[in-house]
Length: 256
Image (cartoon, rainbow, N blue to C red; front, side, top):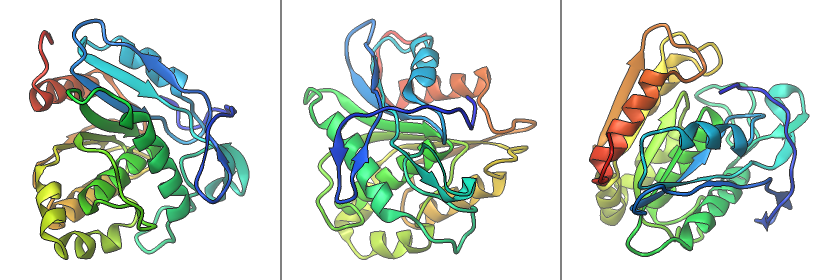
């Protein structure tokens, strides 16, 4: 998937900051509906390109929901507006995080999942900035609340992050360790992180560090896969890993 690619759209509004989300693309299951996963694109992309790739995967029991992020000025692009789940500047361990933007996007994602049937397993995945948003969703699920204190309403069963990073990583451990319930939810949530060792956009060290931070915060059910020679894109062997992991973790029927 390309990292930058211009796209605009309008849709539902959420949060205190007026945010308009773009078009949502849905890939319906070809078999028995056992799981629904919201998949989040990277900076400047849209839900359409990923929906086409996900539709081709041998996962007939999954419904994929591929929303499009709001169009907003993005600091790392010098304020140029493009689709982004939150505002981001240069990646660094001590840089500011746009928690208002993150909360708005994560609430929108939870809202998309909240109307799914009760017997369907729910998950969130993404690429690059989408992966960062998925990981932030995982921390909100574990804490039982968004960064703004509002209750997080969805029971997540799987998180996938490709070529991403963990926003707010400095404070995750303190927030999880302070609550037995948060620690229980963190330890029970399966997470798959994949990262290319030649990633020039989100360097490999951020994937590695995110894994270490999540592990130390109590997310024990976590797998980290690294890929020699892979840059900031995905390849078939990585998506094969995603398919096999989802089939095993969600107990899907009829895969492969």
